[in-house]
Length: 389
Image (cartoon, rainbow, N blue to C red):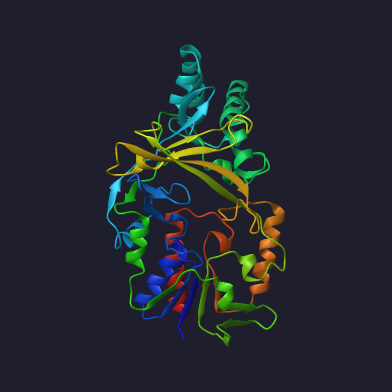
């Protein structure tokens, strides 16, 4: 029997599998999909475009440890992500910044607004929209309401199914207002893409004699957890090895505390001629009756050597996750409310005392991770696990 069983072949599971394998542990990696890489899975389509099956994945980080580890399995090419938003019939930079102001307001007013913002917050400061709306200066509040209305309000409602005020401030804080001309979507020191794609990187990462991969396999068909007896069973036998679970924690325990809420996405993918839009991603922060989708991604705009004749675009529609539904059957983002946090904690409490089961990753830990953050978290998890076992 294997020393470790890991459920899920995304970043959390793959990084953990590689580290444990390199430390002499035999690993069984179980993945329900027909591919590795989790939601970062990509592939070259008939247009010659490297398509990201589950939406665009842009690697950016300030973590030297994450870069050092991943660079063992891939080379990189430079890519700085820029996003435009459809605001009052114009495409303006997102995050909202001084260039956005210049494009949307008359010159005299634009100069005045930029001066007021700089005096209040300094140059190149990142200000969460909810903070901007609380400023005592009526001019700043008026601008904040304009930005909120045209950039945040409807996009948030479409993306999350809640108003911006109802969502955890950390969600809207991820896309701040910038008091300067910085128009890159991310400002991290390392902004690059894997030179052969994410899937190729995962293939090299998981190419180890101590790793066995089982694709197209439902974990619950092989693994079961008994929270009352504090036991884990694998293939019908009591299992006392390491279990690293990166999937839905409510599924692991057969939804006994109810379903945890997630947001899901669906994509309408189509081929166009030439180039479709000026940047990789254009957001549509408009009312749902104007644009029912949230954004359009043109994948070849982040490709090192893109094809010229054709392009592939993906129109993105948010849904509430429904494991039994026609749409929204892939969980993407935990929905953070007081009720969902309490329900998640109930699942964690049920697992208490089962010392060989570990939860890791966005779904299992019910938290948001960027790719660099989960890489770093998985490495730190392995450090602690190997020290204790």
